[in-house]
Length: 161
Image 1: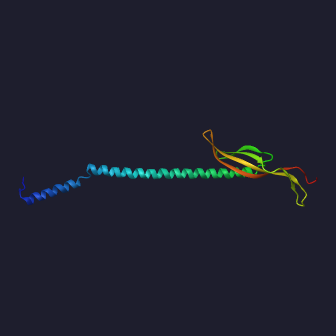
Image 2: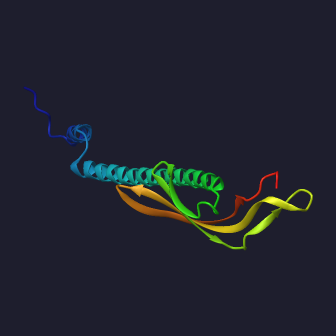
Image 3: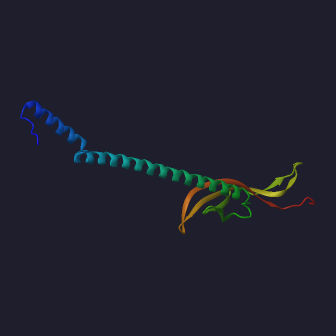
């Protein structure tokens, strides 16, 4: 077995060898903890970003469904004659319900014919108050209130009169 001499040159070689072995062993505990903390911070910020993106996406989706329900409700009410059905409710699809109540704004008048004479109808201007409601888990939640003006009519003459 060979022994190294105690000369300083030989000891210097041995010290550099020990340092190189120590640097090759891997991470120290402190480096691992710091790396884990950085990784956790990045993960938490990515999760927050994803969560806010999903919330925004769900809100946009709900707004699109609500807008479609409003359009369906307006189409439905455009076909309603407020003189004959001054109030009521109807399902407009997608868990949405529309309720309306009509109020006469102008007195009912005789319509005019093409020649300026009496027309076939009596007409009146109505304010229609609309409530759009969403059914959620057997509860009703009001989504919006709207007001339309519609003409109500009733045929009172025929062409023979």
